[in-house]
Image (spheres, rainbow, N blue to C red):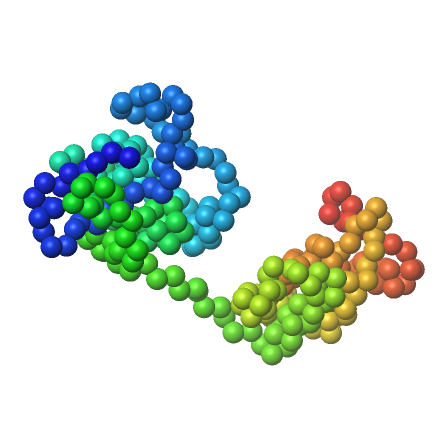
Amino acid sequence: MGVISFGDAMTTQTPPIIYRIRNWDDHFENNRSREVAKLAWVAMPIKQDGDGYTELLSHKDGAAHFGSWCAIVQVAAKCGVRGTLVRDGGRPHDVTSIERLTRIPAKTLECAMERLVSIGWLEACTISQEGAVVPQEGAVLLCPVVSCIVVPPSLPEASQESSDLAEALAASIGTWKPDYRELLADKRERTIARWGTDIDKALRLDRRKGDTMRLIIEWLPAHEGRDGFRWREQVMSGRKLRDHYDKLDIAKNRENASGADVQLGSDGGIT
């Protein structure tokens, strides 16, 4: 890591905050780039199943934040000390300067940077009197534009019957897959509320019968079709229950009448 000089800025009481990409050398350099003084390209990891990537993309604006991250990496690759967001002349980059370079709105950049710090891909630092980069916990963004507060969108309120059916579906799934991630403690309440909304649409808009839907839900765990096909594995949400209602009702009735296994054909029909 090189030394950064801030000139007169080092004489102020509060050292400026800069941002750098954590573990830049490990993730964005290789044997070729380390031999090049000025990069015209940057090597980026392509792992898409890590905690950081999935957390970044889980936000409603996750795609925009990932695009911001890619642009920030490109800016950092051209800085004097690669990976450290400092402009020519020693001034730290902020959302305004990065907006000017990348054409990405400052509002999007700030929200992305706040999340990137939280995830651990970016870190806020200060510069010591000797010019060393020192991580600074709890540092705030330079030139803040807007706070990035993630507020989950509210869901329409479902009827009591729809809520009861959603609870029944959750209990049904729990009998054969108790570790289903959508029903873990931190997600269960919101998952059931979402399922209730979909089931409510089935009852009100599709004019489905609640009693029939409950019978389908109770039938699902025991169903064993041909060649290992199981309807329960296809119906793990209120939306899927709504989408497959007719096929499920036909399969249930046929199986109850004949005792024969029922399987979904390649064309989506019952065979």
